Every structure is written in structure tokens, then in C-alpha cells.
Length: 326
Image 1 (cartoon, one colour):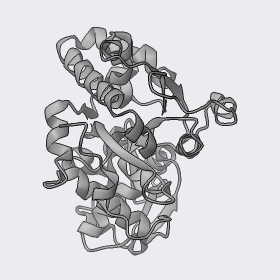
Image 2 (cartoon, helix red, strand yellow):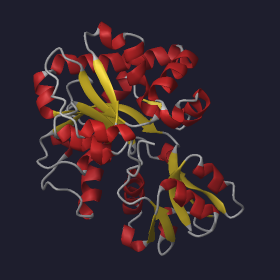
Image 3 (cartoon, helix red, strand yellow):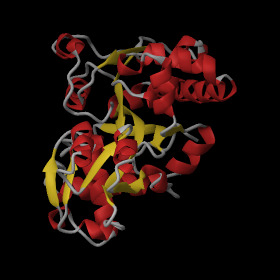
Image 4 (cartoon, one colour):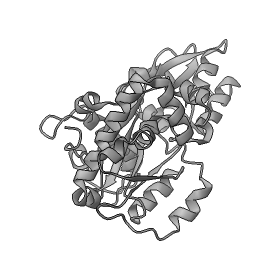
């Protein structure tokens, strides 16, 4: 999944170590992505000709590990990439090099926490053994919930493991709770001792994938970036009218473990795509920021509390570009 920071695609080594130049005006954009259902409309926009109609060509490069994606972005071997909101905060060195330009998809029940039945609230996690992947969006998700409940990560017994392993550990009763995603949420809540404590349908906008560009690319090629945003919106609209055809196209293009349309459509039930109106509401304006600003600030605060933010004085307004969704 897009959230796994532990899987490295074979193509990464060749790509990241290459010397591909930054695309100039009129040249294809190079956008890095990982295997995730929420990125499907980008490929639908390409394959149905929506990007071409906007006068834009995009080359999508699969780079599974976010560390490699951001390294390629910093080295100007990518013009942009897709990732979760919180992830970008970890890779800023000046605070001015990248901006979010578009929200793509929101976790809508696909992520969550399974816990023993006696753990009825987030506050009840205090002193309990909780499994999650450190440095991942699962850790971010957990820490936002803990903070809202008046707790810190140090108030729980942290067990670092991948999301799938965390789910398996819960089913095996080795931990009291696990921050994970499907199908492990369903497996956990079906155990005789477990239940779903919370899922991301209760936290809209918290686990959100976004399209990110380098600031210099935004400055040099705003019209073309607007074309990519327009192409995305056209693709989401087309998907709504033609879901089966669209899902088949997207599954094949995204590939990997989602290449089978059955797997793609099952995973799709845990997210929602952002269309034009949803983006305008979520992103807002510089004068009247939307909910996205709160998620960005949460990411700054949470990762900053672990010493993982390299820039001081970061604020959400510096990192969100409000122009393209308007």
C-alpha cells in the first residue's frame, strides 16, 4: 500500500540513481506514485485522454518507498509525487521546496484500530500494548487520536511492526490493540475478544492522499499543473458515471497487488475520491482555510513532537497552494 515505508520497488534503484533531467515547459511531467487504489483517477485521466485534452502529458513512475520518492523529487528527477499529507512534513529541509496542490482521496473506513472489547475508548488505551508501524501514517493517526483524548504515545506500550503484522499480532492476542487497515480490521473485529475501536470514517480528512509538486515547478508551469488538476476532476466525474469500466482501467494501470479488479474494487470501498467541489471545501482559501490546514498542522505538531521535523516555524499556510482547486 501507499503507506508502507518498507517496500522498495525494483524499478526504484534504476530510476533514483539515474540522471533524468527536470522536465521543462511542454515536456512530460514525471510524477512518482506507489501502488494505491486512491491514485487510480490519475491513470484514468491519462488513458481516457483527459490530460491530453488539457495539453498535458504525464509520465507516471512507480516508486514504492516514500524515502525514494522524496529523494528523487529533491534531486529533480521527479516533478511531483503522490503521498499522504503527513508524509511530506518528514522530508522538508527548508519548508519552501514543496507544496500540496490537490487532495486525491480520503481514507473512509479503510484504516482504524482494533482492540480488546474491554477497551471501549481511546482513553482506555493507556497502559495497553498497542502495535503500529513507527514512522507511518498509522503512527500519525494514533497520535492525533491520543492527543484528542488527552494522552501521548508514551502513555501506551508501543510495539513497532508493519500494519499487517500488527493485525496478525492482535488476532494472536499478543497485543491489546493494533493500528492497521483492511483486511486486518475485519479479521480483528471478528475475533471473539476484539472489536473495532475506531476507523477513519470517523476522522474525515485525517488520512488523505495529495498531489505534491516542487515549488519551482509550480512557479514555472502553473498552466500545465492546472491541466492535471482539471484532468483529475474529469476522471473522477467519469468514474462516477462509468464505475465498472473505470475500475478496470485503473486496476490495470495501478498494477501490483491491485491489478485484479476484484482486489481493486474491494480496496476502493475504504476510500472516497475528492472531486472539484470536495477539494474546494477541503482545501479552502488562504483567507479561509479548509479542514486540510488542520491536518497539515496536526502533522507538523505530531512529527515535531518526535523530533522528526527538520524545519522550525512551519505552518500549514506555507505548504498548501490554494490556487489550483479554485
